[in-house]
Image 1: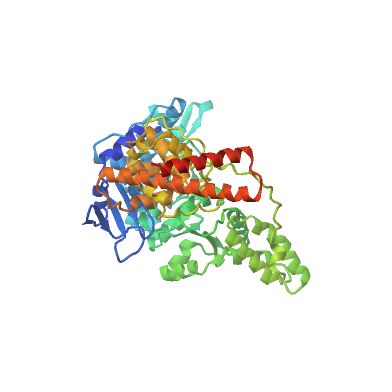
Image 2 (image 1 turned 120 degrees about the vertical axis):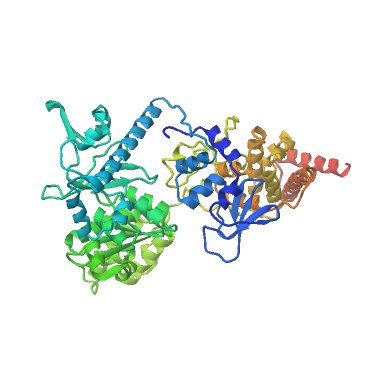
Length: 634
């Protein structure tokens, strides 16, 4: 499935798919009027608050706010990325997912796909050798010695690369030599006109990406040969600073993954899984990088670093601390677990068991405690000089924390340790420069860069958020998306005329065709949130009045007002007639404009009493007075 998925295919797929069938395959639903309801699968509840609307092909939970279309439900429930979810829905209809031609980029995608196919063939070959090769016993004995069962070995796809120079090359075929080299599976010796298998006589650990594809391998030697562990080189499918061993298996084993334990090696991950601890991951021969943590924090709120208790472990923990600080948004947690000298997670869990090991993880040092402990280690905090030194070391590190609440709590903790007032550690605000707000251009628009679905860069990164080929190309949004650090969006007054008009429009996009240009332009000149959103939606829907509500909401999901629009769309209209909807919608718009004109008229009258009006204000006052007289005579 290389290349971009054409937008028209995604739209057609959603049109073909009945969301009720998709949801009912996964949870129990009960018909309640026009909708279906059930217990929400995304949070714990005893009373059903999860609703599926077959007319709008949309689901929404009134308890936790989860909502979206069939594609979004499959992604969330099955813990899949965008392309995988598209593939599942396409298979329901017997469709093959096409790839959109994209020149050189499409060729690169095709080459990557060829590598994925070869790497999967290699993984199957290694697993077969573990079952059938004449020398398999030494590999099996090693795994048994490490306490691994056959079922665990199968879960992680563990295999065996037998002795010999070209077992894999012969199995795949010499005609694939260059492609195997691209995938990192061969060592080429052009000066000798020969090539040979990179992995020989090793236990093989396939490295699986978030989409379940084999992207590389790690091999553990069975002899005294060096190095003990050998990883695939970096290729177009594998970047070691981005991938984590065991993350795919952890997500598959845990429907709600709230914490991961970051350990050093493959065997630690697999051994912990053997003892029922299925949330461990390992870096691939590198220190934990910012990319690793970004990936994890998009999936879950807490990471626990596991280190040996010796000096090397402490130094590695210090590097992990420095990497984590700039990523500590409010709500995220990082902890540090130090094992006794000479122990690793594998040996520790075998000696003390699952329950005791989990207690260790629960009692791991929070980042705040580890930071102050490590900085204080060689300082005399009984002296003023020691506390001053601690403050000098700690403040620059605390300044790196982006989470404002967490940063303030760290400053408070430093204040308590140092004995200084907290205000001493609060940075002075830079003087602000006044800016003029041009409210006439303040209009809401859906995100233009595509929805940010967090870690869906290999799927949603290629998903154009525009709908079909309608030609709708809204101007860049002055509203910050929710991924940016900005104030929260102002709440919509759900009982206001503006919110009601938005609700009616979301349920009936064709109402946009009933709004004349004069009215929509007048909405754009107003300063209220609802009016700006209305103008933006009306202009979009004039170009594409047949867009389904679910797809419309998907386009707005990344805007500040996405969740509130979703909530408005989830409410029942309690109106059955299309004519009634139209009358109420146009009436709401008329009321909005009238209320705003009256407020503006009152303002200009009051201003006239206190000061001389400008010629522009006088002209506007005359226009409003004449408009009011015309309404009275209607």
